[in-house]
Image (cartoon, rainbow, N blue to C red; front, side, top):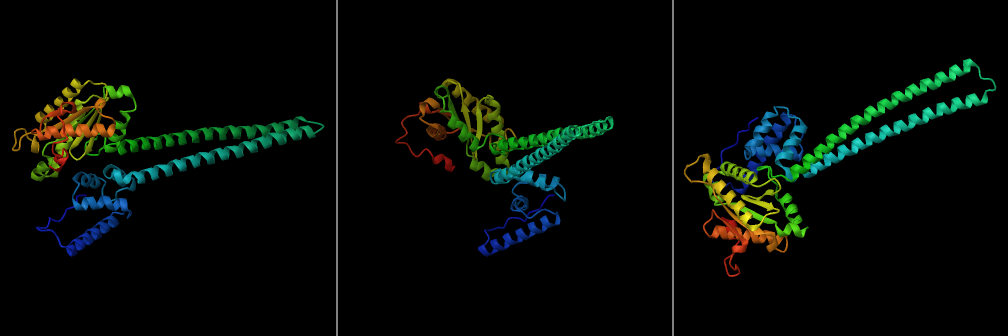
Length: 368
């Protein structure tokens, strides 16, 4: 399903027109969902709104691939993928209910087994009492009692086998729920556009840097920011900007080693948390990233096209020069500002900075 969108108005709509347009879109979405048999939940509405608004072509394509009668579980998957920040509670509630149901089913199985054991025990007890009360035990009586006990035992063995089979099935189902939880944790810590760690995962990782003095001694933070990214978006459009973000993310992830935490901390900024490196090696890594981006990420998809190559400015700070995770981030950001202020497309170590107290506000570059 590909939804066509209305062309943008030549001028900003009045408040009355805006309300009318919003009402029209809401009506179209509701009718489309009803025609496809989609439940009118807020989460489903959010998916269809994004498609009707035409703001996410990838979501549009994936929704279209589901056909004219999409299943709710497939819609939930899209919701988790594209709206992870607002879908966390939905996912958690769903998994929590699944776990509660599986545990309840296991408890029912155990209760049935308890009742069956009690019945089996009662049969054995009655058989024993019957033998004790009889003064004369004939072969016929023994055969009858042994037949009852044998039948009860066979039944109990079969019930035991069924219990084992049911428990294996429930164990497999619980393992599937566990896998869903692991998937959720990964999604919750992953930036959907770049597949790098998101800001949440980054904040947690950098805080742990100061748990161990040994980590602090050779730990570091590298921040990279795409130069003049707002101008790129304004000139070439957001789809091109998104592709550039993905290319830069891929280069940083490939350049960094597996033990480094690589994150997209917001917009066009990236971070690398480093362990076990001296300052010279950190500087070399920053320069490797900078040169690779300049060489491999052209604007508008073609090397040598108008606009030239994409570049990044980089700031780095050794953990030993900061008192905390927040202080480390602040100092790496100051080094990044200096790279911007000195002409961009360069890397700067915080240790090389002059006294910044009298310099202009180092946060101004964020307004580019």
